[in-house]
Length: 231
Image (cartoon, rainbow, N blue to C red; front, side, top):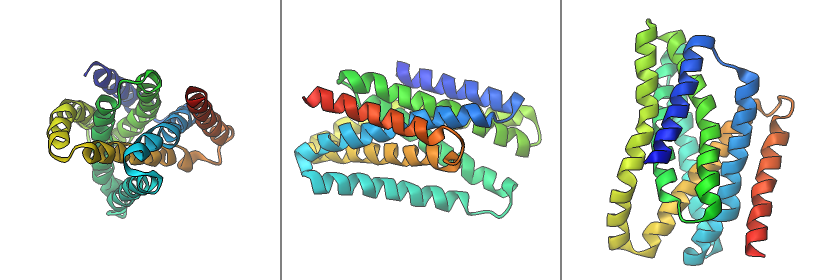
């Protein structure tokens, strides 16, 4: 739970910056790109190969891509339910809460390997700060008072703690009932969420100078570490 608290505090710090200063696009874009590259690389080079040990490569990629596609459809559906920025705020906060739940769940579920114990929290942290900035900025812009915007931002990011709290309890029950396939499916959902977050982090700002370079460099670094470990 300690790492989940750190991630939540980082997101709250980002939200405070968004509430008071507005959205810093240059810094947040490059931070998000670095976090996106880390998470995308972890999914591609670490988690999917781990799933393949149980399911085989085709099923491993299929499960991860299915989870990623489901999140993309959910995210797109939530963010296109309204026609004005004010109407989009509710779905945006709901989508962010869902992402926060997965962040908390993921950081508890993936542990025990030296790289993932460091890289997963780091990737999520680099993603949580810009996310918090965006949530705080949007909430302050479209809600009537600063106190209301702050409460909403804190509540949305606190869902990270709920995901971290529930993960070991739900995972233990699922593993007892379904064995190795439960673990493989859970890791595939996490891998899919990391692929989704990688796309989500880099695509909106892909034309900004240096953003894609940061994403690709981070992705290749994770791939290189994975190859060195297996070598």
